[in-house]
Image 1 (cartoon, rainbow, N blue to C red):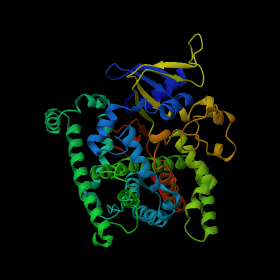
Image 2 (cartoon, rainbow, N blue to C red):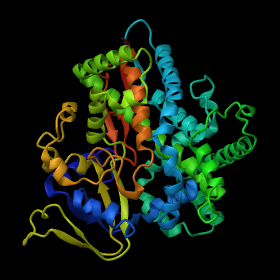
Image 3 (spheres, rainbow, N blue to C red):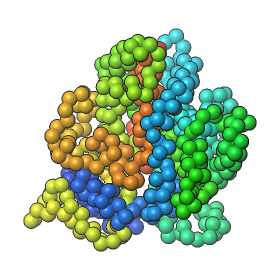
Image 4 (tube, one colour):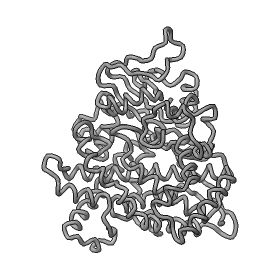
Length: 494
């Protein structure tokens, strides 16, 4: 179920064989439900969200690593933080980011050119996408640059710590359910215990947390000082313009004391922005590049649409133009449907309750349209299962087919009432804990992809690529013994 190599295929086998709800024993013998039924997900993520909270291990892990931010807060605290953050992702603010995003995309294009000779070359695209994804969220979110495309970028310890945190967490995934049982211990005792355990990954994650915390403290103080002066030129790594955190800190200063975020909460949002947005964006770009390399006809059609749009606009594509291109939209939606970067999230039931179903549980007599969930039951929200349900999407649900978005979707999609915040998909989740920055992610990915496809042709990789199950799925070369994320693609200039 959690195996990095076979976990995705095993989960596909589970929901294809047993339907959209199944029960099994978790790592500590706890009762766990794997659920992709849309009506049940509406109850879990939207209607009864206060009963089905984030799992204890998830809350405690991100509380210790990031502080009291969106990922680790619950209840009234989460609602307060979300209320203050929502306006910072407005359409007006996203429009203002487009010139900066084009500039960063141009840096990515230059980095690709630097790796290409006269003909096709194999390029490690995941590394380049990781750089541009980090820069996009750092500059638009924090008003900060890691200077990721400069020659000495790899020497930035703060940058490396952010980049490596989630991959190390993925390696410890089987042990994360143990975390709530020890998280209440004094920090010094926790550190002593971690140091005594014979786990290099555990030691490393403590080190990464320390580096990230120290780096964010420095950045936060620089932001406070620059805001007080309104003079961003004093620090060559603080960018011009009112970024998301700039807007948050400004709004926070003008709100009531009872609704105001404390400094540690704002710092936690800064870390959360970097942690949550970097890997998901780079993985989305990686998957898009791979599927386009495997479908040259789609790549050609997309390149034609983009070239014509640029010619018509007589310049780089703006916010409204990028979001209105039908084939670009279809390619992105279909990739997010079939290959969601985050394949699952977890919840824990905090009180005995009953959850309704869209259709009866297979093999149960008499047919039951609901089921009882005892307090303490762990829930795995199966995002991939919901996005690929043949009863909803049709018999070709597991086929990558962008054209499905160019005509009306089947009535079964509308009738399912999928609760996701984006396009009948669970990819960006649902309810009050849905991805707050999904419109920013959509803009970033479409903008970068629009420049990449017009500049380069992606060709199939020379080696087989496998995708490892983790909180964020990652690509690797088949046969690799190390838990190393890689995506070498053959690339040529157009």
